[in-house]
Every structure is written in structure tokens, then in C-alpha cells.
Image (tube, rainbow, N blue to C red):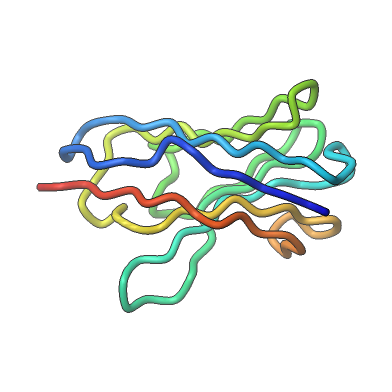
Length: 119
């Protein structure tokens, strides 16, 4: 079965950096665009970033553009999210997702990893 396992979350101060990773198994990784979404307490899940199978195209939410970078390693079936200049409003559970078609229409989801940014 498909498994997406996130890691790298934690508690940091505003202005710090974190790198999230997601390891994928049970799917042909290069057939999927990979996404990151997040959900803050009391809010709906929102799109953060996406990358196509070949890493030639990336997409970002306006709120993270210029601070976050998505990348993938097809040899290792992993996708990462480098988060710099973190803000308290970035606090959320971050989810890795795999999209077989449109980059921001996931079919499979990870269990999430908590990121907390203190002011």
C-alpha cells in the first residue's frame, strides 16, 4: 500500500529554519507530482507547495513564496520542504501528498508532522 511518512517537524523560534522530509513507498514515485499542505488549528487545510515529477515546475502559496523551497529526489523517493524565515503564522500540521494528475489534486496523504513557531 502507499505510504507517505513525514519527518522534520518541531518547535522553533520565529526567524528560524526547518526542513521537512517525506519518504514515499508503494507507488511509482515519478508518476506523481508531490505536494505539501498544512492545517492550522481551527482552519481548513491549505496548499503550501507542489513540484512536478521532473522537478522542472514548482508552485507555491503566496504566503510562503520566497521563504519555502520544495524539492524532490526521485532516486530516493523523497520530497522535502525547506522552510526559512519562519513566522508564528506558519504554525500548523504539515502534510505530504502525492498527486497522480493535477499537481494540487492529491490522491494520497501522509499522517502529518507538527511545526510550531514561537514568537
